Image (tube, rainbow, N blue to C red; front, top):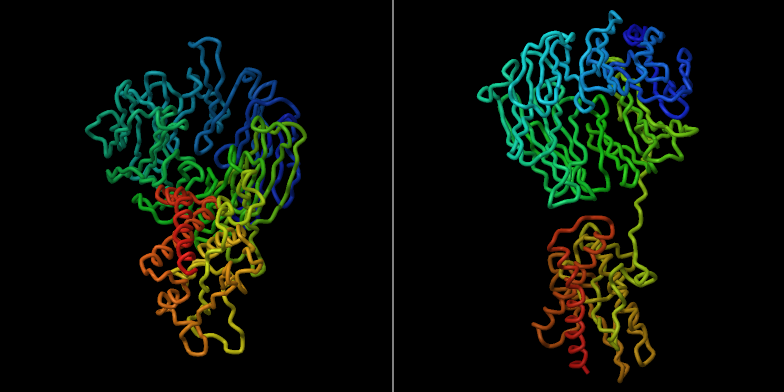
Length: 639
């Protein structure tokens, strides 16, 4: 027995089920990666395959009827030819009951069969539609709700002989807390045709009297509401969505939080767009949400709805906690480039990341250390396979599938079977995470093979190189002290001095360098055939050939001025026009160009810019033109 093995400290092997054109298969996970010896793979067509919540049973469809495999006792039960038309199956939380659903030819025919798995007998028969046939069970299986078309029935035993309650109000969705002590809590969505609906939280058995609701929330125009409880049963999240919305093709969605202390609030999401994925941490103390138009944003919130951590914006639309809540995988799939990254939530550090091309499915193993990924049909009908990745980034197994793979799934395990993985010991000192390779930004054909950042065309029309000032000498990271034994290098970029030249904003500096390079390349050679001075620090006079000498620092020994005198030092390096106001304008415009270059670089890297930042980029041409006019007037005046 596996439960005895787990109690004795013996490792229980991982298992995975597969359903496809090769039939039903049950295989061991890593490190064995071999078929399970007692399970005979069936190469037949199958409509469904479902594991029970704690992994004891596997139920699946065959052309001759539904079969139920007891994995613990290694035996298979045929449920008979009467189950040939069954379309789907679901287990109760404690694996005491199995519900089978088929599509009857007549509405009055029974469509659902309830099996008692302990006595192996049929417990009840009832009729239900495809969208509502699944029973809403309490975690202890003592309370269950049956959703009818216009009526909901509550039972306290699974024989459906006589309901203990029939709420009067129309119920669109209902969910029971996962714990029964000190009492059951039930959350209900009451839709109203033509008017806003309401979500209300009750303490059982008061689920029909609105005055007894612990908390209530109005939801506007929403078509569907989905509930998710935390593991302790004290808080419940619900997502209200509408498929068609005048503001967006993707519809709209709102995320709410309620608790059994009667608090109710809206989760404030600071980026417009749909909620792609939202999950409670299995520990029950916080939850994560991926939301917004692409690139989406992922954040963690506590039970009060307060933001506690953000993972930033990226092209991802899914997230999953491992069963122990100490690891979180963020991923992109579907119409998003397949990739994933694993985070250690204890240290809040990224552990690994990988490309996962054509991934359509992802799931954590019960031991919380292995990710099962797959390429499945009908999303993709070729190249189907399943892959095992260790959370540290190691590829454990890559298994192609001969044909179409419809479904893959880990076999669940009872609580206490495995211990949580420990990133601090598993990673080791020599482990180096493999970063996801970012796709390069698209460059339009007209902008390819150009000098400088994308979006900056070489500036034409100026007959003389305008920048005439010397850039400040480089300073050490620690301040203004330098090693006298090493020669100090001048900045080869030239350009008007920036008032923030002593800052460490590398992205701005590199972007402005690219801009200056683009401008110099527009006029590489003056009419006298000579370059504009060594290192670009001088200026060639077209008529006299005289070269302006670079200014020296007033500091002793040619050392650069200290950072606190940076602005004064920068003004010394400017080519003065004799008009202080004009010089200030030139300095200000050069600073604007550097800021625009930095913003364009961030935009190319995939960062979502604010509206005012986008407006800055649009003003590029006007800034360049204004700067050229001012600098040209300086040059004419000097002549």
